[in-house]
Length: 421
Image (cartoon, rainbow, N blue to C red; front, side, top):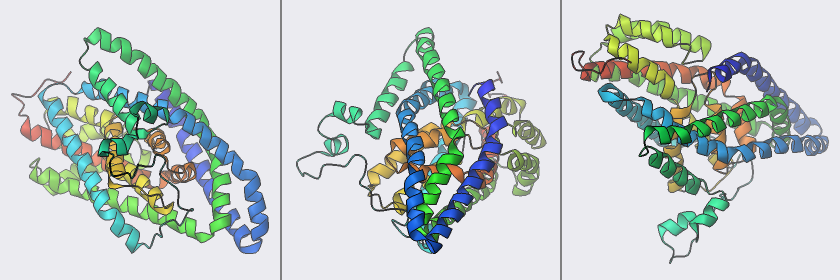
């Protein structure tokens, strides 16, 4: 995000988040009351207001694919390239290790969590066909099973994986271009991304209206079942975020050779700022102070911590992937293992483009969830409750940033480490 866009986000996200959360609660309360007292009247009201939410959802779908392509190109050909040298390479390896650990943790614990908290499959809607069904004909290869008979037709039909592959190939090809030519392409892409984010921000201003209409309709038809499923999601995502946060401490001990008590004492001020502001960027000054408390080299403090805050969001392969798994489960969508793994990989890549502002990942997660074909109603509901687990997300991000700095400091001695820019 540009500085002005980030400032605007900081200034408006908190009031909007509060109003959206209030609209969510009012929608659930009103819909539940109608469901229990006058089901027929509740259905009539739902039929009148639900088109507002559907119109909003359609507008988000229009932006989803171009936004997704711009985010991917900007992340791969632009922002990830900001990690030069030995420390940058070590940092990138640590980033990927953390993100893979989050994905593995989520894939392993999500089915168990759904069973323990009794989240019924299809509890928020009837079974929905996968947006791009695979051919079951045995003579088709796995490749045609993914894209259909024609790759170009898959692109025109909005096949998520086909679009992602084209964007990835374009971004990787840009990395082979001379710097002036690459910049000549990246500048318009970055400008288009900023334009799309502004448009998306305007749409999100209407979130309270869309969320109220959709939650009222949902709860008037399903009663407390939908509310219980959302509550279970919040519990599961916070629990997984806290598990990975706790794993940062032994990681700092065994990989960074920093004692757990020393690491905890140094990290505490930055963690307090993170939980209070819900912003990784706002936590950077406290993080730099934490690095100095640990005696990290100035080269590490000057490069690794700012780089981590800018491009590394450790929570994304937990929070982003869990959103997809949850919506697939509660809407009864038949998603294959290939669908889930492809989505996990996409979340990992796009995590490098998430801004470090309160609920900053909502932009990219909204785009890929809509592009993946999950019901827009569910996406909007998760946006509305995002503020609740957002504290745990930022806590994990900041703790992981400091852990990465400890690991890089150990394997990049000051006499051989890269100089800070």
